[in-house]
Image (tube, rainbow, N blue to C red; front, side, top):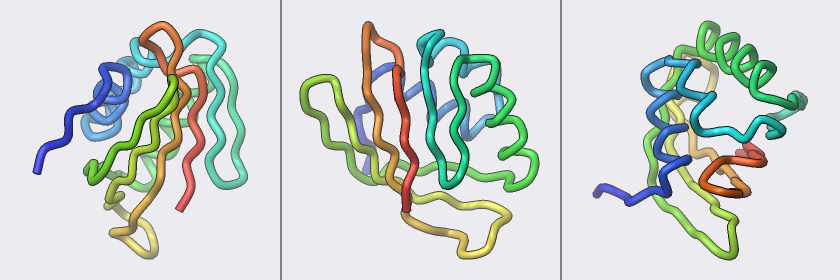
Length: 109
């Protein structure tokens, strides 16, 4: 089953799966924030550096399962697979979208 994703989320998933951290520049707003477990980053340069570190350690991929959207917010439930304990696991990505870019992302199990 293929899910139709909003453009910035589709780019995010493509960047995650390809390891192309430069693609992150296209999907995140310059002032964007990300919260993942105990990590908080702000701004595209910090987000790209964070994703490069995570990708190098976990070499993961994201498979979208379900998307819910409402008023500029989107929640993506996905299967996260890679080199980490508990793989594969279901993960929830909570996005705030502004002007066709990701303004905020929270990642939770």
